[in-house]
Image (cartoon, rainbow, N blue to C red):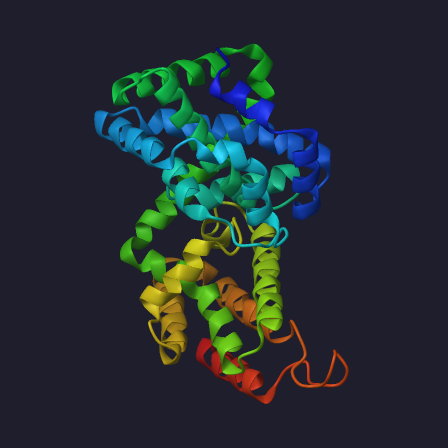
Length: 333
């Protein structure tokens, strides 16, 4: 019977790799290598999670709820996740569950290794791997303990195979960065949610200052995401920027804004709270965090022209957007 990794490899067709490469703006060979590391990385994460009875039961329940239906529509899932391009928001929920709170540090390390933003790809592979786990558990009639045993056996076999040494070197380096990122995240406690929501709050603050149509709004979100990816790519994976934003703008970050800024007029307060948390916990990185917030806001404001007709005329930055930028700049100091 094929292993989980073998099954995953069989699912990823050349056409799918081509689609991934185009959407992520990456060379197909780099995408293939990244996929080769993503599978073992997630398998190890699941095996580690299932290392305790409680973890095994939690993973079993997730697999049961996930179901294997995703396996029959992998192409449409791929299209949905990557149709927005390399800076499309990554689905960080399951990825973070399997890889821990250092998931963005892991993604940042892999991104540096392979030369493109790996975060969205991990967001795609995580539910696909969970679908394979669900299928295996069902076909083999496994309970939580049996699932844990299967995952450990497959992970140990992959790690022990000398042919996989190069892949495991990449995976272990990413995990080491993830461990450091986890320590940083945990040091912030409840304040980490504020820090993670900062750039999304800046996006919303500028975008809501002068609401645009759906097309321009998508342009603004894409521009903000691309800027965040650019900044995270240039930062160390274990730095504040790498640990928080190594996957770019995730769906979780966009949702998090609602909890820290339930209304439009609270967005600036949320950004101030995030900056204060960074200044208290990571003073050496406070300025780089402020610069990131401002860069995301400016990228949002200059994403599309306001006014004019069919792209002719209009202003690149409207008066209301400029007022939002000025207020943000004043607050950041």
